[in-house]
Length: 530
Image (cartoon, rainbow, N blue to C red):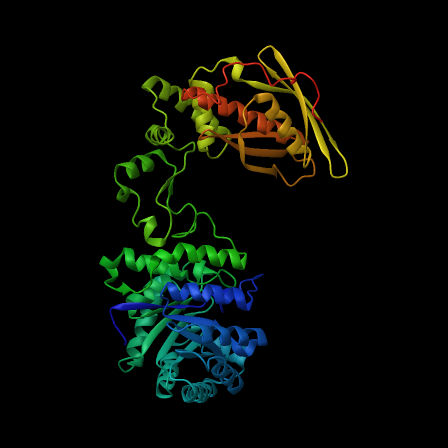
């Protein structure tokens, strides 16, 4: 039942969104997205353009068969073949809708369709009438409506209503409109059509000028009650209006719009990630509502404000879109309040003098790298603030590896204070062998939580940068190493992480497996064990 105080959403991610360059979703992938959209309570899902290809027909047919709560829609031109194909694909849908379109702008009618305005009206009359005879619910779109003559568009919409259409869509097909003029345009069209109660006006905005969401909201203010768009704004050229942006604007500014929405917004973030993963089109970090930085704060003033009261810099809650609560990104813009709060969350309590020193070192570090991780912060405290005796600092002096058919061996030389420690081991590969040799020397058995190697650039002479995370007795430490030799980088990273483990343990007055300067393992001075 039509509710003038509610805005419904028409998702075209699977049709218009898939038209983004390089995107090609198969039936299984589309069905996964459609199921999640239904769970999010999207009112209408445009599953595809059945006449376009056998694959599109199969997608629409499969989704129409599977979904029971959401209206499933198929697109068709005013041609009989398109309409019958769409109706056939929708035959098993619980709630089918046939979406018929034809261009109504002078440039499209003359150069693309090569039809006169009267011929276009004839196409609308025959196409919508046929569609209405095959399905109960028909939507009509005047393609390139925003560049159409308002008087002609009004006439076209009246013909569509007389032929059985109950949804009239006003597309800004090429993203040409601006919010102020589009509001007036939509208002003029809606008043001119004077459609009977129950006929819903819709908007379909493209983002070529970055105005899709703004134009959609302007259309809502003018009386439109269905917004068409895609998840993440995906689509051809600059994309479509992003559903997550429009729905959260209406919900957050309900005081201004005075309208409600039916979507379960807590599913926005998970659905966004699903679409990004399956389509291969990533979400920019600064993307509104669902970007990884949407609820992240780095500026010191912002961080202090959010810690005092979230509403100072957050107009919506991360939890309301299914995202984790606000994240404090520690970087060069961060303030001492956020720095102290992060330290306390990591289990450190510094006095004012220690905090000032640590914060100074932290700021210098942030001049060298964009963000400081928890591991970096703990290293600052452990290595620079607390006094750690030299006996807990291992230095890589030398190493060698041998790789054969199914066998790898490594010998490692470390220095600990004035001692030189040597040992060797075999492993599944050169890095594994080196790590086993190191563990024989350090007398603890840390768990390798994470290991990765990345190139510092795309050049062939780029350094390999290794990152490892070790854990021991509830403590974790990040180590890193860089070299043109990835084995050397990996060994350096492991030794670096071991040193940090000992430093963190000393800072917290924790003894790792009782080590207090004991001698290395029996026989560690030799190269035995290979």
